[in-house]
Length: 354
Image 1 (cartoon, helix red, strand yellow):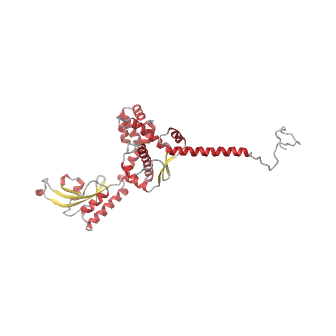
Image 2 (cartoon, rainbow, N blue to C red; image 1 turned 120 degrees about the vertical axis):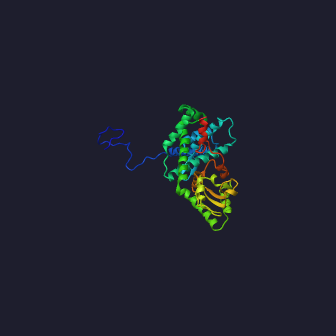
Image 3 (cartoon, rainbow, N blue to C red; image 1 turned 45 degrees about the horizontal axis):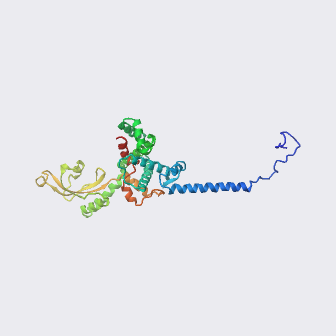
């Protein structure tokens, strides 16, 4: 027989009344269950109250700022990724700090600032996702090079650290992570998009389709103006009379052998793909410039940019902005960028290197 609480170990032939009978279970008193249930309800109620405060209190609230450092509340959902309230608060504090360092802060409402920050944070997610989609790896050497360049411009790392602290309230590590790294990623992605034959090939095919419309009988200038108006290019397709020698070298080469009423193949220019149309070749004796000239028309389509790919990604991705939803998305896209974003980083660099 096993020893019990009242008998010494090894005692035999003695029964023990303190051991429960086989098959019996000790029940927890109802009062304890009620206490536990009350505690659970209290915790749930407190969590609900805190959650309500997180999303109803104005961004920048001191209490909420402490909560979001601990609890990962989402500020937005982008596909399978979240933008945290903590990130929003960090960027907001930095923005307010930056504004206070200016002699003349921008005339922006608090809602405008939050909307701008949220757009920037969502854009950062988009850039990271596009980097992954194109199998691009962050160039750590480029990050170090850019940061070192900033250090050299201001005259030392201690001076840079002081400027960053005064301007944004950040350490150099946070600045490097939130500003320098996103800027390098955007630069890498921009270069990839610009140089990708697969990506830019879409626009080349598009321009070729417009060229075919002219071949099929449509007026070149009508097609050109229609296309460039659609792309909101502030130019018309009528170039006018121009000396051949004043045209870019690749244009001159493309125009060789093209007579009146003829057009070139698609030309890859600087940031655009275009087709040139010769309205009339003008001999030296009749040219205003006194040299061989041409009455020229053109059709241009801008190359695909990083912003185009970001817009395409966001169009194809579910985005739920819990905080900072734009009233009119198109207007927000055209407005200024967050000073702590990839786009605003050059401004920051200028600020901290003054």
